[in-house]
Length: 553
Image (cartoon, rainbow, N blue to C red; front, top):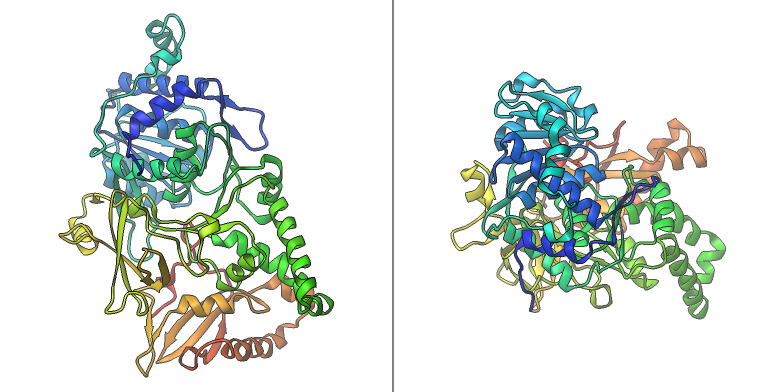
């Protein structure tokens, strides 16, 4: 049975118990801080909040790239009893300003390079703006005097703790789990972002499940490379490790396969949290070319030899990920079916989970040894799920969930809240799928992207795209309906094209071959009538999902 602890007190306890252990490092820099040093930074930030008039319940907006300072500001805010508003650094300055204003934030902590493009006069409620990197004041109201308070901060801190700040001084606010802790503005796929209100209960549900499942443990190593402002990275690359005394190394760079594999090899994390794109690129660029060669393809057809080769590939892949992890948890988007089948065939220790920001984020997960290929794991014991279908096990319907992790609603947006949260507390996810009797979920696609064929069959474009993305010369794709016919928009894999030497005037015939090969793999009603090449990568959300609404009409 999972006991849901008080969210803030989890960290009060953890910082005391893990006082002398390493807490945070930034990859490539010799700057590890212990839990003791981290707790002192949090206490100093609490004193700053107190000095400049930030009160429990006030909103603190935080926008910048992942860093030790980012983690300190986040944790100081929530343990003070204020409400954190993490903003993805990829958002443009206009959207950052809108989110700061919409949330009613009184303080903004922001990276210098983002602030350069913002207009101070457009910030309506903010009393002060502070640099994330230097803690210098970038902008303030005349009556706040933030700069003076920062200048006096160390003197006041030493006066408050004359014998030094010790583990006995770690005492955080008593705040019920029902209180609001975070407003997370999703990237969204239609219209503007909505502020997801997450309570202490929602976040504690995720963290306590992570602790119960021993995803991280005392003295374990974590490599954080997903955006911490996103619910997935926040919960399982930061909040859960900090709750148990893990040592977090922040990558702080774009996680290209080359950069990421180098870091994984050096840090050797005990758990890897990633999005499908990472595994899909490694499979397509490194594994697929190797197993598609004539000799290798022949060898894999021989029963005894294939197991030897798969064992070698598995070992090479495990070593590439650091060699000391329990499992790789894939989430944030659907995993390509071909990649998933191959990883399962070679017995690579991976599992696929399912969640959304509105659940902070986790809905379902199964440890890799029990994972069913094609599923998104079993509904968490602290959650309920159902599928709105006459036959939920076989006929897809909308997945609905309720329970500990489900958000309070969208901030200052009752209409949007009512559209997804019904009177019985069920969150309508907008995802289509089926559900087995034991609560295992099988996702098919988004209800908004589902297409209807001329003969009435449901078409899930994501399933066709998964097959198309593994074809030669295809980097990424979108399947759309154009005048009753399925058309594939394709951004070509120019690296592969250049490597093989395909001429520009041969691209149309090459793509026609791709179309014919694809149509052999899909149902008759899923067949593509035409491939249209697009000149640039598709525009994406910060979690690397394509903004489909920009390309459908």
